[in-house]
Image (cartoon, rainbow, N blue to C red; front, side):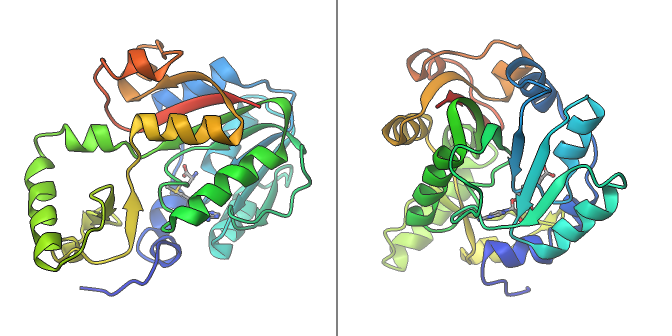
Length: 255
Ligand SMILES: C[S@@+](CC[C@H](N)C(=O)[O-])C[C@H]1O[C@@H](n2cnc3c(N)ncnc32)[C@H](O)[C@@H]1O
Protein backbone atom coordinates (compact mmCIF):
# COMPACT_ATOMS: atom_id res chain seq x y z
CA UNK A 1 0.00 0.00 0.00
CA UNK A 2 1.37 3.43 -0.94
CA UNK A 3 0.90 6.23 1.56
CA UNK A 4 -0.46 9.43 -0.03
CA UNK A 5 -1.04 12.49 2.15
CA UNK A 6 -3.60 14.56 0.20
CA UNK A 7 -5.58 14.81 -3.04
CA UNK A 8 -3.03 17.09 -4.69
CA UNK A 9 -0.56 14.24 -4.30
CA UNK A 10 -3.15 11.78 -5.69
CA UNK A 11 -3.49 13.89 -8.86
CA UNK A 12 0.29 14.39 -9.13
CA UNK A 13 1.09 10.68 -8.83
CA UNK A 14 -1.36 7.74 -9.09
CA UNK A 15 -4.03 9.65 -11.07
CA UNK A 16 -1.58 11.70 -13.14
CA UNK A 17 -1.62 9.58 -16.30
CA UNK A 18 -5.41 9.31 -16.29
CA UNK A 19 -5.94 13.06 -16.32
CA UNK A 20 -2.88 13.99 -18.40
CA UNK A 21 -3.95 11.73 -21.26
CA UNK A 22 -7.75 11.73 -21.23
CA UNK A 23 -9.55 12.68 -24.45
CA UNK A 24 -13.09 13.38 -25.75
CA UNK A 25 -16.22 14.66 -24.02
CA UNK A 26 -18.77 12.33 -22.45
CA UNK A 27 -22.50 12.52 -23.24
CA UNK A 28 -23.30 14.74 -20.22
CA UNK A 29 -20.49 17.19 -20.99
CA UNK A 30 -21.56 17.49 -24.65
CA UNK A 31 -25.12 18.20 -23.56
CA UNK A 32 -24.11 20.80 -20.96
CA UNK A 33 -21.70 22.65 -23.24
CA UNK A 34 -24.11 22.61 -26.19
CA UNK A 35 -27.14 23.71 -24.19
CA UNK A 36 -25.83 26.23 -21.67
CA UNK A 37 -22.61 27.80 -23.04
CA UNK A 38 -21.96 30.39 -25.72
CA UNK A 39 -18.99 29.90 -28.09
CA UNK A 40 -18.06 33.58 -28.21
CA UNK A 41 -17.88 34.25 -24.49
CA UNK A 42 -14.86 34.27 -22.17
CA UNK A 43 -14.82 30.81 -20.57
CA UNK A 44 -12.81 29.31 -17.70
CA UNK A 45 -12.41 25.66 -16.72
CA UNK A 46 -11.35 24.97 -13.12
CA UNK A 47 -9.28 21.82 -12.52
CA UNK A 48 -8.50 21.42 -16.20
CA UNK A 49 -5.96 18.60 -15.71
CA UNK A 50 -4.37 17.91 -19.10
CA UNK A 51 -6.80 20.34 -20.74
CA UNK A 52 -9.16 17.72 -22.19
CA UNK A 53 -12.42 19.71 -21.94
CA UNK A 54 -10.96 23.01 -23.15
CA UNK A 55 -9.17 21.40 -26.10
CA UNK A 56 -12.45 19.75 -27.11
CA UNK A 57 -14.30 23.06 -26.68
CA UNK A 58 -11.83 24.79 -28.96
CA UNK A 59 -12.57 22.09 -31.54
CA UNK A 60 -16.27 22.97 -31.16
CA UNK A 61 -15.53 26.62 -32.01
CA UNK A 62 -15.09 28.29 -28.58
CA UNK A 63 -12.71 31.22 -29.02
CA UNK A 64 -11.77 32.65 -25.59
CA UNK A 65 -10.63 29.85 -23.30
CA UNK A 66 -8.83 29.78 -19.94
CA UNK A 67 -8.01 26.91 -17.61
CA UNK A 68 -6.20 26.33 -14.33
CA UNK A 69 -5.06 23.42 -12.20
CA UNK A 70 -3.00 23.20 -9.01
CA UNK A 71 -0.73 20.44 -10.38
CA UNK A 72 2.02 22.18 -12.42
CA UNK A 73 2.88 19.02 -14.39
CA UNK A 74 -0.74 18.71 -15.60
CA UNK A 75 -0.71 22.33 -16.79
CA UNK A 76 2.61 21.64 -18.54
CA UNK A 77 0.97 18.70 -20.33
CA UNK A 78 -2.08 20.83 -21.28
CA UNK A 79 0.20 23.50 -22.78
CA UNK A 80 2.09 20.87 -24.81
CA UNK A 81 -1.19 19.57 -26.26
CA UNK A 82 -2.33 23.10 -27.15
CA UNK A 83 -0.04 23.44 -30.19
CA UNK A 84 -1.58 26.74 -31.35
CA UNK A 85 -1.15 28.13 -27.81
CA UNK A 86 -4.58 29.73 -28.06
CA UNK A 87 -5.77 28.60 -24.60
CA UNK A 88 -4.53 30.43 -21.50
CA UNK A 89 -3.47 27.63 -19.09
CA UNK A 90 -2.19 28.58 -15.62
CA UNK A 91 -1.19 26.95 -12.35
CA UNK A 92 -3.63 28.23 -9.70
CA UNK A 93 -5.46 26.92 -6.67
CA UNK A 94 -9.27 27.09 -6.78
CA UNK A 95 -9.41 28.30 -3.19
CA UNK A 96 -7.52 31.52 -3.95
CA UNK A 97 -7.52 32.71 -7.57
CA UNK A 98 -5.52 35.49 -9.24
CA UNK A 99 -8.24 36.39 -11.75
CA UNK A 100 -9.94 39.79 -11.49
CA UNK A 101 -13.49 39.90 -10.12
CA UNK A 102 -16.26 39.49 -12.75
CA UNK A 103 -13.65 38.51 -15.38
CA UNK A 104 -15.43 35.52 -16.96
CA UNK A 105 -18.77 35.13 -18.77
CA UNK A 106 -18.84 31.37 -18.19
CA UNK A 107 -17.12 29.04 -15.72
CA UNK A 108 -16.94 25.25 -15.56
CA UNK A 109 -16.22 23.43 -12.29
CA UNK A 110 -16.87 19.92 -13.61
CA UNK A 111 -15.64 16.45 -12.82
CA UNK A 112 -15.50 16.56 -9.03
CA UNK A 113 -12.96 19.39 -8.51
CA UNK A 114 -14.85 20.75 -5.49
CA UNK A 115 -15.48 17.24 -4.06
CA UNK A 116 -11.73 16.64 -4.07
CA UNK A 117 -11.03 19.62 -1.79
CA UNK A 118 -10.59 17.98 1.61
CA UNK A 119 -11.45 20.82 3.98
CA UNK A 120 -14.99 22.21 4.37
CA UNK A 121 -13.76 25.80 4.80
CA UNK A 122 -11.68 25.51 1.61
CA UNK A 123 -14.64 24.12 -0.31
CA UNK A 124 -16.74 27.09 0.78
CA UNK A 125 -13.93 29.48 -0.17
CA UNK A 126 -13.83 27.82 -3.62
CA UNK A 127 -17.55 28.48 -4.18
CA UNK A 128 -16.98 32.11 -3.14
CA UNK A 129 -14.03 32.50 -5.52
CA UNK A 130 -16.12 31.04 -8.37
CA UNK A 131 -18.83 33.60 -7.64
CA UNK A 132 -16.31 36.45 -7.46
CA UNK A 133 -14.66 35.80 -10.85
CA UNK A 134 -17.98 35.36 -12.73
CA UNK A 135 -19.60 38.46 -14.23
CA UNK A 136 -23.17 39.35 -13.27
CA UNK A 137 -25.51 37.45 -15.60
CA UNK A 138 -22.77 34.86 -16.29
CA UNK A 139 -23.23 31.08 -16.30
CA UNK A 140 -21.57 28.56 -13.96
CA UNK A 141 -21.58 24.77 -14.33
CA UNK A 142 -20.72 22.74 -11.21
CA UNK A 143 -20.56 18.99 -10.84
CA UNK A 144 -20.15 16.95 -7.67
CA UNK A 145 -19.78 13.42 -6.41
CA UNK A 146 -23.32 12.54 -5.34
CA UNK A 147 -23.93 10.96 -1.93
CA UNK A 148 -27.45 9.88 -2.97
CA UNK A 149 -26.01 8.08 -6.04
CA UNK A 150 -23.42 6.26 -3.97
CA UNK A 151 -25.58 5.39 -0.97
CA UNK A 152 -28.42 4.08 -3.15
CA UNK A 153 -26.13 1.72 -5.05
CA UNK A 154 -26.45 -1.85 -3.72
CA UNK A 155 -22.86 -2.42 -4.76
CA UNK A 156 -21.51 0.21 -2.31
CA UNK A 157 -23.90 -0.20 0.63
CA UNK A 158 -21.88 -3.05 2.27
CA UNK A 159 -18.74 -0.88 2.13
CA UNK A 160 -20.58 2.09 3.69
CA UNK A 161 -21.87 -0.15 6.50
CA UNK A 162 -18.35 -1.52 7.05
CA UNK A 163 -16.87 1.99 7.10
CA UNK A 164 -19.43 3.30 9.55
CA UNK A 165 -18.63 0.34 11.83
CA UNK A 166 -14.87 0.88 11.83
CA UNK A 167 -15.32 4.63 12.39
CA UNK A 168 -17.52 3.86 15.40
CA UNK A 169 -14.95 1.40 16.77
CA UNK A 170 -12.25 4.05 16.41
CA UNK A 171 -14.43 6.64 18.12
CA UNK A 172 -14.51 8.77 14.97
CA UNK A 173 -17.63 10.80 14.19
CA UNK A 174 -16.51 11.65 10.65
CA UNK A 175 -19.45 11.85 8.26
CA UNK A 176 -19.88 9.04 5.69
CA UNK A 177 -19.92 11.79 3.07
CA UNK A 178 -16.11 11.69 3.40
CA UNK A 179 -14.97 8.54 1.61
CA UNK A 180 -11.53 7.24 0.67
CA UNK A 181 -10.74 6.78 -3.04
CA UNK A 182 -11.80 3.23 -3.98
CA UNK A 183 -9.47 3.19 -6.98
CA UNK A 184 -6.19 4.84 -7.82
CA UNK A 185 -5.20 4.94 -11.47
CA UNK A 186 -7.88 2.35 -12.29
CA UNK A 187 -6.57 -0.16 -9.70
CA UNK A 188 -8.15 -1.03 -6.35
CA UNK A 189 -6.95 1.27 -3.56
CA UNK A 190 -6.51 -1.27 -0.74
CA UNK A 191 -5.99 1.58 1.75
CA UNK A 192 -9.75 2.19 1.48
CA UNK A 193 -10.21 -0.95 3.61
CA UNK A 194 -8.48 0.73 6.54
CA UNK A 195 -10.33 3.98 5.88
CA UNK A 196 -7.10 5.80 5.05
CA UNK A 197 -7.06 9.46 4.02
CA UNK A 198 -7.15 11.35 1.70
CA UNK A 199 -10.92 11.52 1.35
CA UNK A 200 -13.22 12.96 -1.28
CA UNK A 201 -16.48 14.61 -0.23
CA UNK A 202 -19.80 13.25 -1.55
CA UNK A 203 -22.42 16.03 -1.57
CA UNK A 204 -26.15 15.66 -0.87
CA UNK A 205 -28.33 17.36 -3.50
CA UNK A 206 -30.15 19.67 -1.06
CA UNK A 207 -26.86 20.60 0.61
CA UNK A 208 -25.36 21.86 -2.69
CA UNK A 209 -28.55 23.71 -3.56
CA UNK A 210 -28.44 25.53 -0.22
CA UNK A 211 -24.73 26.41 -0.45
CA UNK A 212 -25.04 27.79 -4.00
CA UNK A 213 -28.07 29.90 -3.09
CA UNK A 214 -26.47 31.23 0.11
CA UNK A 215 -23.45 32.36 -1.92
CA UNK A 216 -25.74 34.25 -4.29
CA UNK A 217 -26.10 31.98 -7.32
CA UNK A 218 -29.47 31.41 -8.97
CA UNK A 219 -29.89 27.69 -9.69
CA UNK A 220 -31.41 27.24 -13.16
CA UNK A 221 -31.02 23.51 -13.85
CA UNK A 222 -30.07 20.40 -11.86
CA UNK A 223 -29.54 16.82 -12.94
CA UNK A 224 -27.50 13.67 -12.56
CA UNK A 225 -26.18 11.43 -15.34
CA UNK A 226 -29.66 9.96 -15.93
CA UNK A 227 -31.35 13.35 -16.43
CA UNK A 228 -28.52 14.68 -18.62
CA UNK A 229 -28.58 11.60 -20.85
CA UNK A 230 -32.32 12.12 -21.24
CA UNK A 231 -31.70 15.89 -21.76
CA UNK A 232 -34.30 16.57 -19.05
CA UNK A 233 -32.72 18.54 -16.22
CA UNK A 234 -34.93 19.85 -13.42
CA UNK A 235 -35.41 23.45 -12.38
CA UNK A 236 -35.64 22.60 -8.67
CA UNK A 237 -34.27 20.11 -6.16
CA UNK A 238 -37.79 19.31 -4.95
CA UNK A 239 -38.71 17.54 -8.21
CA UNK A 240 -35.28 15.98 -8.80
CA UNK A 241 -35.17 14.16 -5.46
CA UNK A 242 -38.07 11.92 -6.59
CA UNK A 243 -36.05 10.74 -9.62
CA UNK A 244 -33.16 8.25 -9.94
CA UNK A 245 -29.84 9.96 -9.16
CA UNK A 246 -26.87 8.31 -10.85
CA UNK A 247 -23.25 9.30 -11.51
CA UNK A 248 -22.16 12.89 -11.09
CA UNK A 249 -24.60 15.59 -9.92
CA UNK A 250 -24.58 18.81 -11.96
CA UNK A 251 -25.92 22.28 -11.16
CA UNK A 252 -26.25 25.03 -13.78
CA UNK A 253 -26.28 28.48 -12.18
CA UNK A 254 -26.52 32.16 -13.06
CA UNK A 255 -24.93 35.00 -11.11
C1 LIG B 1 -11.16 14.72 -11.77
S1 LIG B 1 -9.83 15.69 -12.36
C2 LIG B 1 -10.52 16.36 -13.85
C3 LIG B 1 -9.51 16.86 -14.85
C4 LIG B 1 -10.11 17.43 -16.13
N1 LIG B 1 -11.10 18.45 -15.87
C5 LIG B 1 -10.73 16.35 -16.98
O1 LIG B 1 -11.95 16.30 -17.03
O2 LIG B 1 -9.99 15.56 -17.54
C6 LIG B 1 -9.90 17.04 -11.21
C7 LIG B 1 -8.80 18.06 -11.44
O3 LIG B 1 -8.96 19.11 -10.49
C8 LIG B 1 -7.68 19.50 -10.04
N2 LIG B 1 -7.87 20.13 -8.71
C9 LIG B 1 -8.36 19.56 -7.58
N3 LIG B 1 -8.37 20.46 -6.57
C10 LIG B 1 -7.90 21.62 -7.09
C11 LIG B 1 -7.69 22.92 -6.56
N4 LIG B 1 -7.94 23.20 -5.26
N5 LIG B 1 -7.23 23.88 -7.38
C12 LIG B 1 -6.93 23.61 -8.67
N6 LIG B 1 -7.09 22.40 -9.24
C13 LIG B 1 -7.58 21.41 -8.46
C14 LIG B 1 -6.87 18.22 -10.01
O4 LIG B 1 -5.48 18.44 -10.07
C15 LIG B 1 -7.40 17.49 -11.26
O5 LIG B 1 -6.63 17.77 -12.39
